[in-house]
Picture 1 (cartoon, rainbow, N blue to C red):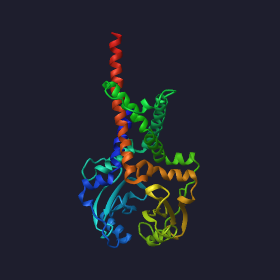
Picture 2: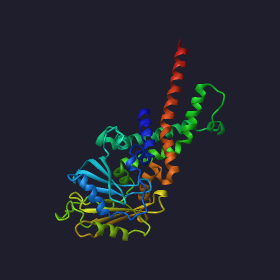
Picture 3: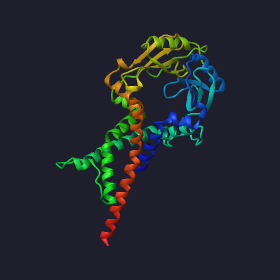
Picture 4: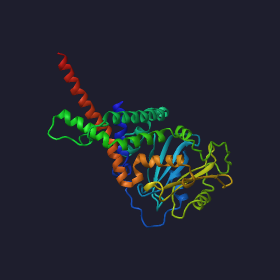
Length: 358
């Protein structure tokens, strides 16, 4: 079990800085956002479609401060999203910078190492059953942390010695002190990662437990054949979504309508409310009539709904920007440190116990 925590922690630490690592591994993605007009979204999507003409255009995630290029995603078909492909497009020129298979993928190449680490962290070799497994792992992490806190609690003793490392002591004492102090100081971060991990891997279960109303239920809405597989209505859908958001909102993503779900899903991010990440505003638009179906605004959500919106920025550390990512990076290293020191303490005590029995 400890090795599972270590694995998830290390892969999570890497993902805290995945845009930077991806640019180092793939220099063609290290572009500067020129002060030129942004290319029309339609041109970006058409350029990407020419790269994968036989795939279904699924969505686009627009360039941001972290990722300087547009990411256009494709699936095998409108009804099959078991595999995804990614096309990276320059935001100013609409030039295709590269393409690759996206999550899930196991390809330990320079080009696709980051997506492979994403796959390992999100799916843990288990495919469709991974959300349940990872949810259980998150729950076990919380239980173990609370148990460790109970065992550490002073119970009338002085707090000072329990919060510091003793100097000039034996190696076993150093290991014990480090294990205890690292666990205490890292408790809040690890608890946050455990709770947010459960929310992210089992969103349906958590939403049901918290009675969070879904913005748009599963729909059997039929998409007119004239609109199927085309970009008809793109500009109108984006314009309507912008009209439902503040003037300084940033366009984050657009999900295309399909035969499975006949609506546009446009997400904008409004500054404030959810730390550095901003507050999401999701608008669902009928692909046939281009009328608004539903709006999921952060400001109009219940406390439970807002709580769920915080989980991804918390889990990634992006809620505090670069300092937050660094804190989560260190938090991901803690399971390794606790595992190594815990194993060392157990081994030394085992040897001592064996010697005492002789």
